[in-house]
Each structure stands twice: as C-alpha cells, then as structure tokens.
Length: 381
Image 1 (cartoon, one colour):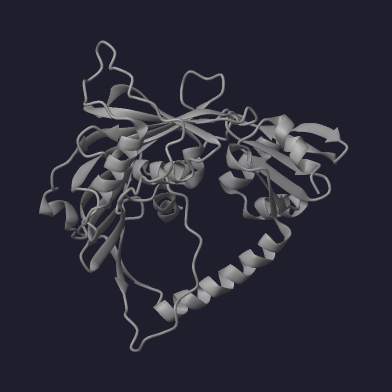
Image 2 (cartoon, rainbow, N blue to C red):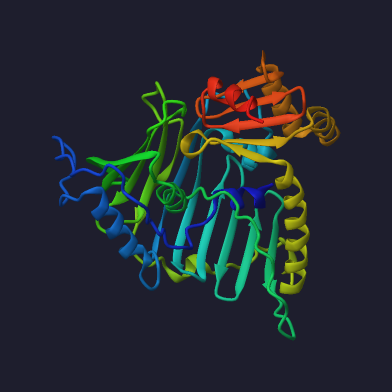
C-alpha cells in the first residue's frame, strides 16, 4: 500500500508539456492590490512560455520542496483509518497529506512521505534505487537487470493517475478544447513565489466542475499548484501544490542512502523487459475484453464512462479481503440513493465532483456530471 501511494502521487521527474489550445483567451487582468506584479501575459502566451520553459533539454530545473494534497470531495463519512492505513491510497480521499521531494535530474530523485509516527522514502541516484520503510525497519535495494539480447517491444501499458502539480496541469491543459474556456485571472502567490493563474472553465452546464485553476511560477513557468472547484463551492474540492519550493540544485547527500544499523535489507530486481512485455500484453488483453463491453457517453467535461459492474461480486470480494477497503465500500453504499427511470433502476452516489450510478442490470456509470446527466446517459443504448 505504501508503494501504491507513491505511484498514485507520482513524482516530478518529467517536464510539464503544457500545450493545448487556449480557447477564449483574453488579456491578463491587472494585479489587484496586494498581489505580486508580473509582466502581462495572455493565456496563449503563458501556454507558449510554459511549453518552451519545461520542454527544453533537461526538462524542469533542479528543485526541492513540499507538496501538499487536500481533498474535500463531499464523500460520506469515511471509516477511521488505522495507523498502518494512514499512508494508503484510501487516505488520499479526504483530509490533507504531504510529501517532500528533491529533484536533481532525471536520475536523481528523492520522495519522502512522513506519517504521524513513521516515514517512507524512495531514493533514486543514478543506477541505484532504495525504498526505505521505517515502520517495518526495512530497506529495499531496487536494481534492473538488462537482457542479454534484444527482445520484442513491450505492449503499451495504461498510465497511472498523474497527481503532481506538473502532471495534473499537463493533462488538464492538453484536454482544453471547444468544451473549455481558458482565461488568466489576477496573479497570486504559491509557496512564497509569484504565480500566474490560468483558469479552465467547462462550457457545459451539466458538469459538476466550476473551474480548474493552474498556478504557473512567474519565473520558471513550472506548475506549482492545481485547484479543482466544484459548482457552488468557494473552496477547492481538490488541491495539490507546493507549500514550499526552492529552484536550486539539492545537496548531493539528499540522494545518498545507507540502511540504519539493525535494518532488514532486501534485494528486489525489476522485471526484465521481455517479462514486463509479456505481463503488459496479458494486461492489455484483459483490458481489451473489458473495453469491448464498455462505452463512453457524451464528450468533454460531461463524459460519462459506462462499464460492466457486478455489485454482488465486488461486495463479496471486499468482504473476503476485509480491511479499510470493505469499510469504505460499506460506507459509500450506505449513502446511495435508490433511483429509477425509463432506463431501469439502481443506486445513485453523489459527491461534489463525481456522480456514480450502479444499475440493477449490471452497469456502473461514472462522470464529473450532475445526477440528471448520469441518468440521461443510463438511457443511451
């Protein structure tokens, strides 16, 4: 679960290629009293500046800082997580969580996730990588064994969610199109640095998203914060950004690691390319089977995914596994509202940003849309 948390958060090891169409872009609104003063930029200019700054050789500049993620999605009361579960992916569904990052280059990275009593660290330094878990007093050395001969090209693997400010901004800006209005509002400060604020607003009234704000550093144009606002809310329902950041090369000792005395040391070799390719092909085949039965209704911000779903099977599996996953499922289902219509009947689950519909005929519909949109999609054959 701890390793899964790092995957979900991602790490800022790639440049944020913030490119996309700037629909409805207008001039920068003059900085209001108290806001930092930056040279005026239109949305098009900011997108071009950001793409040029982060797309150059070497990507984002060396940096270090603290990233905080905060979620207030309006979920039903979540079960209390155990101390061990405090760093699990489920814990990211509510409250605030932070990681500390040090980035020197593509092969020099450290990510630390502190909890109330413990800490996990991922350290990459050239060809050596360590994963340290203080809760179990275990240090794992990760190595990669190169193949003896060339192998076939692995099948493409679906990407994990991108939840660093840079990755989240890249994904959002790449999707800015005819469904989105992009504009620049007053400048602000993030982590003590002046930033430009790009605002993406859905044009479709059926979306639960009011706007997404992306804060670009006024000097480096690196995304420092992404905020998602739900309709009718003055505070962001989801936010991820730096609370402290420094654009200077981190000291070399940040990328060195020696297991503490008494620690259990394990060795872990990553899958060979041919093995990884075989596993990816198997995964792709399973995904293809599901995709054959799945479909998408609508487009843009009101897209609704429709996939086969057997609630009895999922409930039974969660009960067998137990733990926080089962407790969360029970809590969410308890908050569901029975609904029906020409499409049939089912259970509706609503949050600030996401609506889900579990139909009695075995479908799951999910989208960042209103309940009206989700039930309308349920009637589309």
